[in-house]
Length: 62
Image (tube, rainbow, N blue to C red; front, side):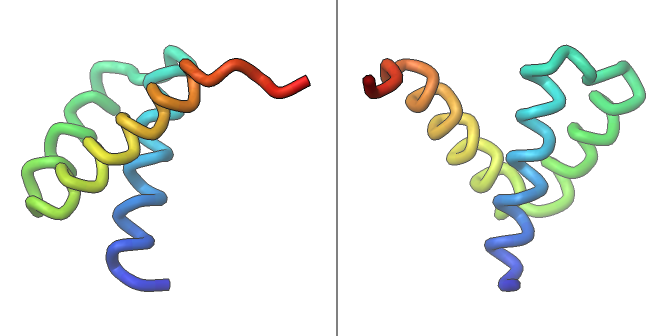
């Protein structure tokens, strides 16, 4: 697994926690620290968030 893959997976994990309403204040602080730790983290998070939003707008196929 590359670093970019690891960043993507971590970003997706954070987004899923947010969407499930499981982002406690402690986890919010952890997310903020992770985002500040490396510009690649922010990039992966923003990209994963865009994908999450886009896939939510696509109706399921029948």
